[in-house]
Length: 167
Image 1 (cartoon, one colour):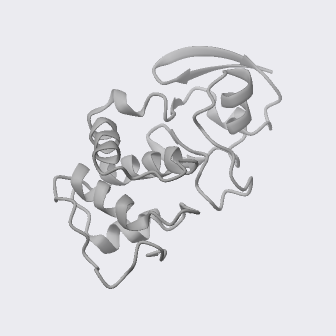
Image 2: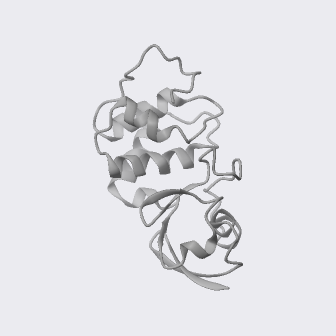
């Protein structure tokens, strides 16, 4: 089926099965490899994109459900002020280690700050708990979110080491 999508502000026509995961439409049909495949079950967060401003797992979102909706991917997240601040904080604090999960982390962090511009450490940990980082950069992720929110990069809970998942 042919469906018109708006991806990162650009209208795109895609022909695919309506139940094909949006992740694969983005990667294969639209040649946008920034959104990553992680677990395929919506549990790790690597495939997170925004659908009409809401963070969704694209591996579990059928292509047909995206018809007529605005999709923002990692390739377009910095086109808005919040996404620009998040990506700048990620770079300034050197958050990524291997980097594989970071597109999903950035997309989730951007959605968090859109909904809650001044989150507490607990707010951040709760919101980001569905995004897994195999390299365990959770404290740097939290610090980057705090910096992007204008709260400073200080880490609220020094009892958690960088190797522990905080949520």
